[in-house]
Amino acid sequence: MKFSNTKSKEKFIKNIFKKILLIFLILSSLYFTITSNSKKEENIENKKSLDIANTLYSTISYPFKATYNLLSNIEAAFSSIDELKKTEEELWEKELELQKMKWLEAENLKLKEMLNFQKTQKHTTISANISSDNSSNFSKSIIINSGSENGVEKYQGVISKNSLIGFINDVSEKSSRVILATDPVSKIPVIIESSGNRAILAGNNSKNPELKFVEKNNEIEIGDKIITSGFENKIPKGILVGYIEDISENKISVKLENNINKLEYIKVITNIYEESLNSEIENNENENN
Image (tube, rainbow, N blue to C red; front, side, top):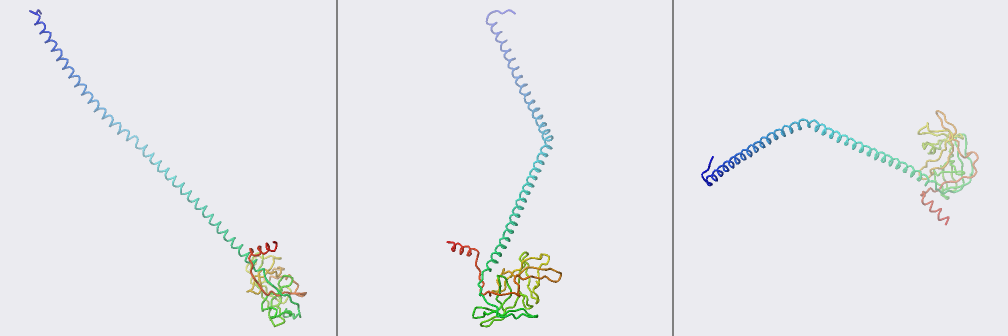
């Protein structure tokens, strides 16, 4: 192609350039349109894929989550059981402590009773001589040369060598009658020291009085010590009487500490008073100082 002049050539080139630029713009537009559409389709596909994946994950993971929750609940249940066991053990320990406290309280009460028992050991006496022996086949008694003017009263205990032999039964101004422990009239409350059983020492007109109304025979043995259990404010607790000599089905015999047939000097218990252990200790300390 021939051009008549230079202007025509330039015009031709400009037209070609415009066409190329237009084609480029059209192609660019198509490219961006296609690219945009591709990305949208890709996003849609990705979204669908993501939804499917989430659905599959939820379906697959559900049993694992349920198992995990179940195991967590079981663990919590076992933890609760452990707590209950711990609480039960603590309650059991407290119960043991309570039982121990009750036992100690009972032991303290026994000790207090023993201390109270020891308090009654204190008493005053007056000495007397035996004026006559009125014993016979039917009664066992003596007359002493002390009476009401000396402070003697009815039912006061009478001892010889610190063991009980009887009690005052009749009182005059200057003399008194003593019923001996072997007399059938004599009924003296006593205790079997080893077992703590209470009984009545009853005279039977022989040298060996008997134990009556014994609480528990199976706890009694030959040789057990017999002491007074106390009678009002006349006979103190804890005075030695004698020892069990024989045990049979219908009879428990007691050998008196003193030989009733060989009495020389006696004492009448005229005053019984209580003195605490602390007071006794204080008196001993004062005497030592």
